[in-house]
Image (cartoon, rainbow, N blue to C red; front, side, top):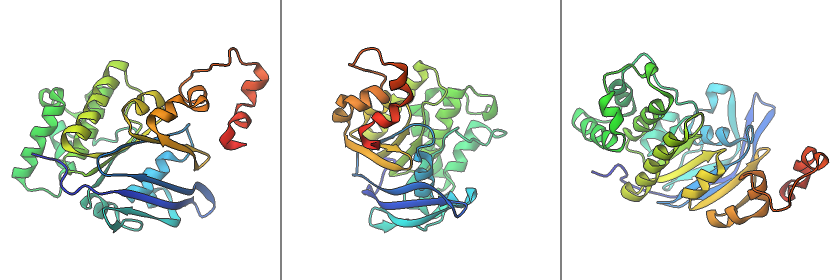
Length: 270
């Protein structure tokens, strides 16, 4: 079976998000994800990446946030002011940062929560796909999710999202706090979801190297705005990206003065 049914393009135009009526977290952001693409959204902590995903997923109100300006279009639909459940039904599902499982529930029960729109037969078909992607979850299916390892919990979080049969999967920091071997497993599954099931993926990461290694296109976000974008390969080759996000510098040892003023040296913030 295919998890994706009606792939479409995502287009966010001139998005502005305000918290508490005063704090501007996202400033005039525009980005696109074509059907079947993996698009990486990179940036440091506090850049506004997670806020953008919350706007896409319709959950800003939980944190007193609101879309002040701009539009979010997906597959010909205007999702800008859709409720979270309508956005899920439209085929856009988020895996939030920190996993946010229902800790007292079992793996199976958490997966069922993700497939709330499906009948029992469809649930079992989707569960079989999830267990095929994450065999360890089949072994742990009756265990309480709160007792799983961090990596296993991330697998459950992704599996729960897949139970909704998304066409666009938005992942918020999927590698956060995980061991390298588990990150490899998670990224292998993300790649398979894209290649085998045709899912469009919007991947928010601080781990720029891993994200760009799998992405088709990338955006870099700083201080609430997009400061650079391009094909993933061109971003990996960009000197500023290599220094500030990949930890690679061709200029030798930096002085303390240069390090203290590194933001001013970013061409995109000058």
